[in-house]
Length: 370
Image (cartoon, rainbow, N blue to C red):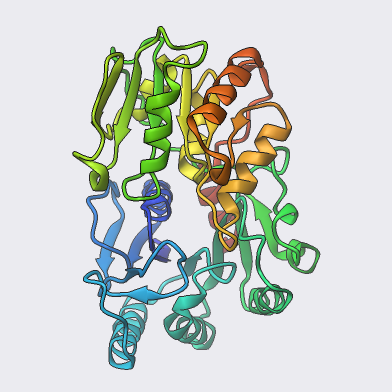
């Protein structure tokens, strides 16, 4: 049985680890012996037959994602970096994998070069050499400097395969990564990675579903939604707000609004809802494209973090969703976007995107190894 060593690091939200868990579970079900190695905060995950290893955890120090810290907020020192790298390499040598997968690197996670560059060195030195694979989302940070783009291109030469978990018929990778032409011969689109849990729900029929991760990033959207509810064409509907753990108790319900914790049957609620309002992270957008009738995206974004904004705007360009850029968010602009979404065509009237990414990844890796 071929072994897969899969490195993943979530820093702010949990989207990266959720997608990696779906992929690890699918690879294991297809016959691989998978070890998912996580460097982020511990979480409860459904990994199926895949195994799991927790590194000493780190997180982003703030929403800028420029610096790392321990979970208690204290900065990383050289001793911590050296010890974490030692543990990672020791684990890699013990596993002796046939496939090494790095999630998002070298297009992101550059703060982890202290451990990922030695990991690449170890993989290239091992005999027989494992297949070295990068697993990356549909969009990367377009604000990369030319120097940073060239560094990513150069590092890609050390990878055998770049797996792009997207659909070029919807969004091409070259639209966000300026070095696309230099890496395209090593790259393969897999389709989006979607979690199809088959759940159903009786709740949420004909409602407006508002969802976002916890913390300060999500609070402005909830406040705007609470005020926008009374302004637009859906004022007569119930609005259901799904609150992440970090916002629990910070959002109060009003007449016509239901406030509750985030739910595992989110996709079922999307199918029942008249309209979805959410941010534009990878997993949420994939769920929206698969399950929602109509949608408004309010992306998280900064001058540096462009991924969600690009995804939302490019989908809005095609008329699939309505979009409110984060800096323009207010009750007025959100209400107007709700009206635009309701006047526009339903999402299912557009050609469906490829969501077979997990199974396609497994099949592609089996072919490469054989």
